Image (tube, rainbow, N blue to C red):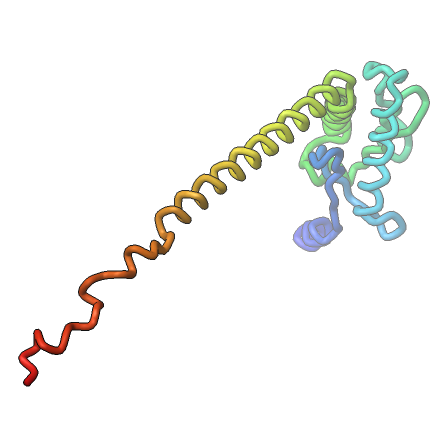
Length: 179
């Protein structure tokens, strides 16, 4: 019977909680709240917390409830870590809740850093520099193309004097030994 339970556990779908393209951790779903929806909801809550710079990262804490370990920030629920979530990772619920809390803290910090004034200014300057390099390359390329075109035109230009070759002139009849 343990093999049946193990097979059943593996068949329960999981989904990664992803913020800014980075998978933070994996959660299990239920029939009422599928893993994909649960992961998306948790990710949205993390993004909302990250967008509120008044919330300190130290405000992210855990609390034990009947359903599992609740992760909260300033009274706002982020998620509940369940026994099923701990089973996915093969560890205890309190251990995985601690790891998940730290990953959420890190994700919020990185989210805020990526959207800071300095990061945005740097991205704008990099974009402008890239655009300037592109424009310069196009100007130089156009100038080089024009020069190559002129060189090719001079080299392949048909000269009328070259068409008047003596070898192409008709030979006089008396020079051919005609009577």
